[in-house]
Image 1: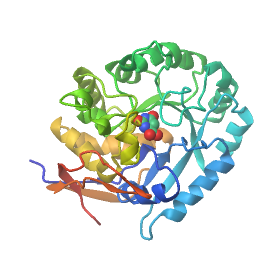
Image 2 (image 1 turned 30 degrees about the horizontal axis):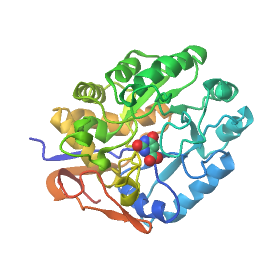
Image 3 (image 1 turned 120 degrees about the vertical axis):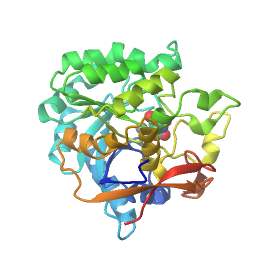
Length: 346
Ligand code: DOR
Ligand code: ZN
């Protein structure tokens, strides 16, 4: 049995850092492991201009503890009013890597998202021309669509039309959760890639609803049936270069999750690479972890692979019940339980 792993330092291609004191308290968890992360723009209010993205990047850099080397890669939040000029400005900056499509109302802080895809067609045309990637939260939002069918409905209603109408647009289908999404990306054009979270590799929907309601396993897109989980594990461990790591680590105050109307989001930054190692280990595919975590995303985004390396040891350690989150606490994935892989400090 492999006792120790050493591989190229990974990157997180989908991360929620929040802002202010909350951001400052979660940032070290990501920066202890990942060299770079694509930082989501769904702040309140959202990051919609290049100037706002540059200011947010500055706040992140200022909050980084001394001795940690970490590069935040910024994104813009698309709204019905996003202009092609803003996209060209973003692409010309050295700060903004991509723009994020939240269908209006799809998830946390998506109220200002896009109501109809046609509203952003001019912006998408500018992105296609400039080579700026589109990151999609792939869930249809109509009230009559079952929550568990929303990703599949998005593929039909929105993603296939986008692929047809913008054949040159580079698209990341974020945090995929279904066999259908995995198959679409596997068989799809080179412009289409996907990120996969640790929770969607490790858990199915029973984690939320069996034996009581477990709000800390609730995220969007919601966990699906076991056969979907298995399809995601197969995709992530296949070695296919267009599947890569994106934690979607999304911290919320404990009280905002343990509530009559709990927020969507799972916090995984405290043990992200360890959780992925567990999933790959269970699948007998530890040899595929480096590609998924450290090569495929960098290659797809056209960035250099990281020059340094990390080490993980097979070693049990107890995950704290909670971590400080600004003025409150966040409950991490597997809080109060044990993990079997541990990232070693340099
Ligand atoms: O569960 C989620 N939480 N899904 C998202 O798309 C957003 C995220 C958040 O920001 O909390
Ligand atoms: Zn997200």
